[in-house]
Image (tube, rainbow, N blue to C red; front, side):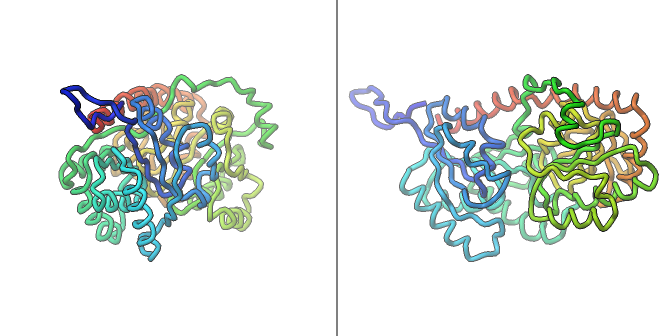
Amino acid sequence: MCDVRDRINGQSEINLAKKALLVTTVSGFVPQFEMSNVRILQDLGCEVHYAANYNTPSYGTDNHRLEGTGIIQHQIDFVRSPFQLQSITIYKQLKKLMQTEHFDLVHCHTPMGGVMARIAARSTKTAPVVYTAHGFHFYTGASMFNWLFYYPVEKFLSHFTDEQICINKEDYERAKKKFHAKCIDYIPGVGINIEKIQKDVDIKLKKEELGLPIDKTIILSSGEMIKRKNHETAIRAIALLKQFSNDFHYVICGHGELSEYLHDLAEKLHVSDSISFLGYRKDMMEIFQVADLFLFPSYQEGLPMALLEAMAYGLPIVCSDIRGNSDLMGQSTEQLLNYCEGGIMVKKADDVSAYSQAIYSLLGNKSLIQKMGDWNSIRAKEFDDKQVKAAMKIIYRRLLS
């Protein structure tokens, strides 16, 4: 799409392509979650710029995945916490970037990216501004601090937001009722490419490659080793489960600040022989195929891609009954164990006994595992990325025209 800025003799003069700026806290976010939006913007004729911290380890620090994408990169010294003086530096860096490049659209993600980009855009009169909330920090069950701090900040900044995108129903309903963005839309995450879901792995060979037992039920978790992902509760549930069964092996894929702590916890609970820590993986699509059950005990999610991918590969799910998870799995209930079509949701995210009970109820029931997995395969198709791309293309076109 070209920018029509001057008119000579009643004719439109076509100038250079428009410029779009993506803003996130860490550089791994766009290559992992937002490349489809990058391609949409480029197809619309936009020169895509990306402002983020390229020096913070996250999502494997796969900055090489940006090579050859045509994305122009800008280092911004983002930190995760808003309670640091560094925020002033971040604001100045973004303000200078916007004043220099004269962007025609800003699309920001992540809490700090969303806050700082909207403030800088307001100051420089850069518009339109899109903010995708990948799960507000205030939600049903969130701490009082989160409500007292994050909620008023987001409500205030919604005045400076041209397009608010929410990826789960709870956030969408709250934003519609309470916020002031010019447009508010629900789009179910980044979507999943169903056509790429293939079950072509030699399971025995892959298990041998990973050092996993051939004849045991493989329970899989994936996600950063941070508090929000709640791996500790999962490991404690595995330790409790081991008192009743030894017919399983637990696999954790991911890395992060709690890695050493979680390894030590497994040692302390005497379950190291039943757990494989595989670290950050680039072969998750193959690992999903050797798993029999997906365990996802997060405290907080927006609309989790890891859970959606596990469903697409036909895995039954044991997960926390929280916003995002329930969008994929079905309605939330007040039951301690919510038996859904595709798995079991645990009401209290830190209920070790409930997770253990849920897993145990599935271990010996192959027909139920198969039934739940089949339902999840069908359900995942409702989140095909074709629908997401079509919706985003409409939004970008509207904002850029």
